[in-house]
Every structure is written in structure tokens, then in C-alpha cells.
Length: 249
Image 1 (spheres, rainbow, N blue to C red):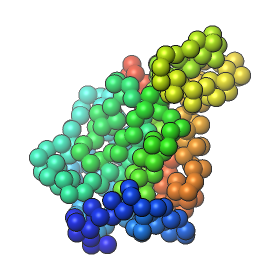
Image 2: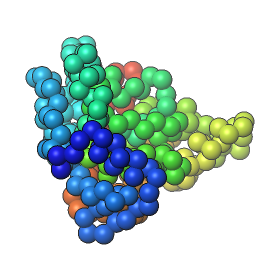
Image 3: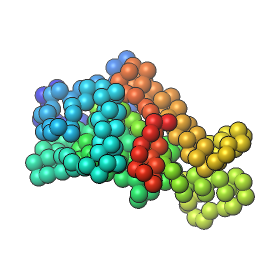
Image 4: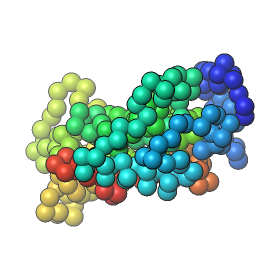
């Protein structure tokens, strides 16, 4: 594209303020977008831990390498210096969207040992995409910021899932607006419960992740088209609170 920083800002404003048009190639608010096409932007500074990402498989391998560093305690804290901060000031270049839980123990940049501008985290208790603002944020990351991978990251001992289980099994209500994050998880609990698993919490956590993956893969008008065209891949994963390990679901 070769766009200036001013033009890039106008493009972003066009997305946020304009309509959405999807046909063949994806045009968002008048801006033609090819997912993963950031060749016209200045290349990010790289280190041995910031392997360039060409596709979703590369993205997942990079995240897994970072998680291995996190688990082993051999963190490199890449892309967190003044040079990276200055580089990302004009435009951000994340390679993956992470739909994660708001749980304070699961910060994506730390869990995957990434830095400024590497990830586009979208966090809400229970890691669900039921709310349009959450879904829209994920669409923005995939369609406008050219992320090639969307990871739905659930985690062990999830309080939102436990609250949904209490609602289903005990009829226990939650106060205020908290029910807004619990209710979207109820169908996952009901499905998991039907199979009479030995650990309902674990089964419901994974079922919830799988449901969110399916929701995003089939979400119109943006994500489904990108997924079908092979421009974006949506996968599910679970973070183990005790060990720090992330496994694909």
C-alpha cells in the first residue's frame, strides 16, 4: 500500500466510523484489506525470539515457543524496549488476536513472552464472544490489523465457568451485571454435564472454548469469510494455572 501514517489513521477512522462492505476480497469502511498483508509497513525489529510470521501455523509455533520460555523461566521479554515503543507509535503490527479471560493470572503477553505490538488481546471474564463489542474487537484485529491467527484462550480454575456451573446445578444466582458474563457459558456447562464427566469444571472450560471457536469461525460478515479463504485461522487453547503450560484444545 505504501500509505503514510496520516493515511493509515484515516483508514482506521474510516473503519470505526464507516459501514462494512464484504465481497470477495474484504473491504472494511472503504479500506481494502488482505489479512497478513503488512509488507508495505516497515518490518518490525527482530530478535532470535521474534520469528517473522507468514501464516497462522507460524504464529502458533511462535506463541508455543514463547510459552515454553515462560514455563521454563527463560523469558527473553522481546520487543519491550524504547526502540520498539517508538516503532509501534505510528502503527501497530500484531500477528495474533487472543480472546482471553479477564483473569489477572492469565496475561497473554507474559504467558507467550511477547512484547509491544505483537498481540491484540481481547479480554472478558469467561473468554466468550457473545457481546458485539468483543466480536467487533476481534474483527478489527483480523480484518484491519492483519492478524493471521485468533486464539480463544481458556484457563483452568476459571471463576466464570464455576459460576455458570453453580447456576446450572444449584440454581445459584450472581449479583448485578456479572450474570452477563456467566450466562453465555451456561450452554457449554449443560453440554458438558450431559456427558457426566469426572471433572465438570475442566469439561465445561474446554467445551466453552470449543463453542467460542465455532462461533468465531462462522461469524458473519467478516470472520467466516476470512476463515474460509484461509486468511485467518481460529483455534482454541487452555492455560494451566499451576504449570503455566498452554495446550491446544
